[in-house]
Length: 170
Length: 170
DNA sequence: ATAGTCATGTAATGAGTTACATGATTGC
DNA sequence: GCAATCATGTAACTCATTACATGACTAT
Image 1 (cartoon, each protein chain N blue to C red):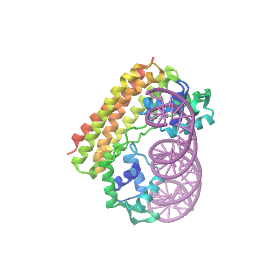
Image 2: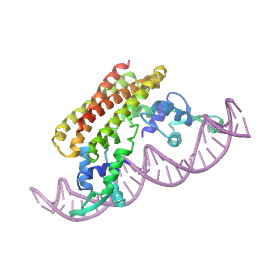
Image 3: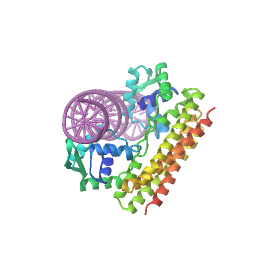
Image 4: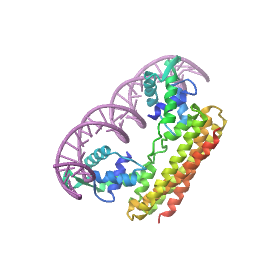
């Protein structure tokens, strides 16, 4: 049930339309909780029905602007403080590692080398995001910096691990 | 479509029943790709229908032992070498970080401290798994060690990050 | 005028979770 | 005899992805 809370969280920064949220997801939560257009509109509908958000304005082209309600904010806070984050994060990258015996050592090393490179590329992308996020003064940017730092450390660790793992295979 | 490949991968080590696989998941892939009993039996059915596994024996209590076919192995190898691992790993732990402005600084620090502690506990659990995994000589254990090392590094990094992040909030 | 972007919605499908349902065999 | 464990299967529901469908407004 995290998409719901992602939407409530974004709306807590100010009212927005489904379309706005879609773009907001792309620049902020994309690496943490991606969402599709379809999912967003459906969720906004459910959220409105549950009274956690309200339609506060209608604009051109059928644009509907949503704002989070008090009940929505309460639900967001409850989720942050009282619901335990999911223990396991699925990783099909790591799942493949278990089965590397099924391919040749050269191929296995190739796989790990590619993972190291991908981590490197992601690292670069995130370094690029940094200046963007550093600029913002809104809540999302302030705390987004903590999340970005996590991402940077994760990518570095992943690259180092993949390089080490490659060296372990002979 | 990773559950399918997780099953093929486990069966590549030798024939097993749904029940066996369920236990195997718990001791090997639980932290990387958890699966429920229900999911496993359903997937085995589909896999058999697709010709990627065969029922090779039937035992007491309706036990069915499955073995991976050549086609199944080919599919497993194709998946490892040709299918790109998923880019983003969803993290509702990190998602909450974006919205920490919604709760008090004390609560936010508390949240991060708890994440640090949870990472510490997971670290201990994995240290415990280490001796178990170090003992095995099968393919799954050999490559499982690489995955375990990843988990250890990840947990350490996560703990350090959470402690750092906590210190950033005033 | 027309291309681009803004804007919302639905349908189909696949994947994952929880709960229910059932029964055989084994060890004490 | 009875509890534990072995063993499989199905149903209902939620969540996520992809594709389809439609149309209004804006800038050139």
